[in-house]
Image (tube, rainbow, N blue to C red; front, side, top):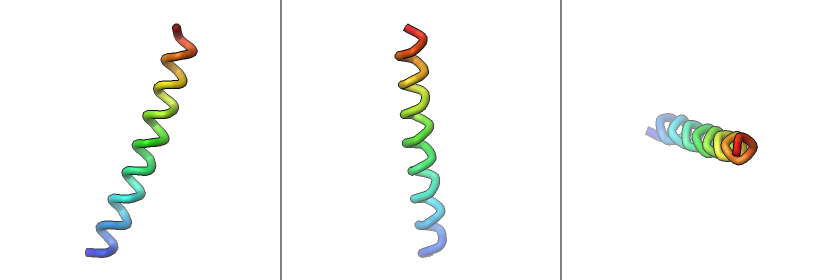
Length: 30
C-alpha cells in the first residue's frame, strides 16, 4: 500500500512538472 502511494506521489510530481512546462511553452507560443 505504501509503495503504491509513493508511486502515486511520483506520478503527481511528474504531472505538475509537465503542466508547468506546457504552460510555459504556451506562453512562449503566444
